[in-house]
Image 1 (cartoon, rainbow, N blue to C red):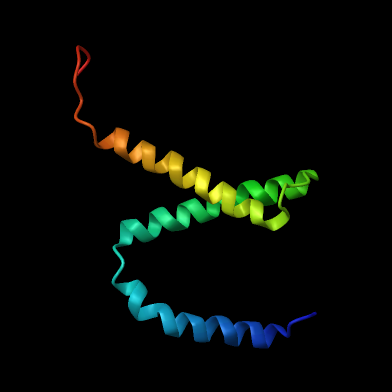
Image 2: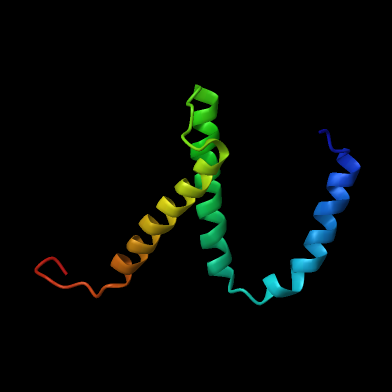
Length: 89
């Protein structure tokens, strides 16, 4: 099924108008954190696609990558927030 580019553009514009106000209430750093996770997940997936990798689960592998990036980055945030202790501080 092929979608008309104009219809796709209109659909994105309608969704953008619908979610603009709720997204404006989300803190900027939280939004950047989520976008970074999504870009990383899609980037790994598309790099693999370009190299000919057959992903288990097909396109749903993106969800797994996003979960892994979320777990790793959340752990990094926890470690970064810890007070520095020890001889080197």
